Image (tube, helix red, strand yellow):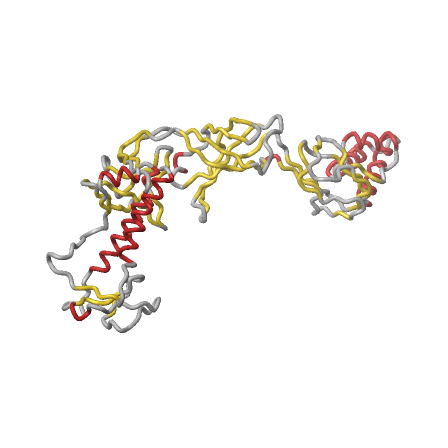
Length: 412
């Protein structure tokens, strides 16, 4: 609608309201003697105020009250049922009202929503120790560093680990000295297994055998490929087996956590294909690998997890993305989205009932499709509804309801 039409249409509503609400009067009580049958007195600014004493001001704003005559059979028009708006053809053309039909339509085979890239939780690896000790030299000293499996993380001095190395060397030398083979082999195997459980690699154990001397500071290596996303390790710190020193996340695959409204979540299932539109990286393909079995009570949405390959590390965790989920097409009774007006917890559509009259009708909606909302209750196939300028119709309808309230007889 052009700005000129907005101005003219708004003027229609405001002028009508102004004439009725603010008609000048030298004395609000003048003419009371000429009114034989007064129903009650009301405030022009607050029509809900209904009093029988004309000398009492409005308890809300303090204005003088005006009389409301009793209705007679022929002089006052009465309104039954919901308020409606009547507009001539010229007024409809001026405002630019258009209509559409509620009809059974084929729903789109695609759900559009938003999501956020997160780490694939199955690729997370924590680095902690099985022995206590002290960190001597730190090789990975910041978050965000890329590491490969086997890369050096830090060196550790541990009295327990040092003692286990000496036990291993003792058993290893006994084997070479021709000690009782069965007992010594079991002792050697047990000492070797302890060193492996305490994160010494086979190469380190081999070096221990070759040197014949225990390593005072043992190098701890990365157990996985990925990015360091958390670091607690600091040179010189004392560590216990319960201390998480690093967290490493693999980025070969990522998850996209998409929010789907409860009206549409039933159409989504595991295995469906999805497209993810990433700012600056274009479109990538993915597949739904899990639908979470609960809704967020604050947003009334369900969460869908999409698995996406990320071979070039273009997909950055915590990036917000648009998501298109391919679903099966179906047929449903659809009302155009623009025909529905949200009014608090209510959903209102303006139904064209003929002769230029438009009636506000409360509706109950189902799923939201690309072509509109699924109609559950309130409208039927073939109903004609207004699509633009609903706020003008709603304003006009409220004025009509106010006028009806002013004219209703309540009795003394």
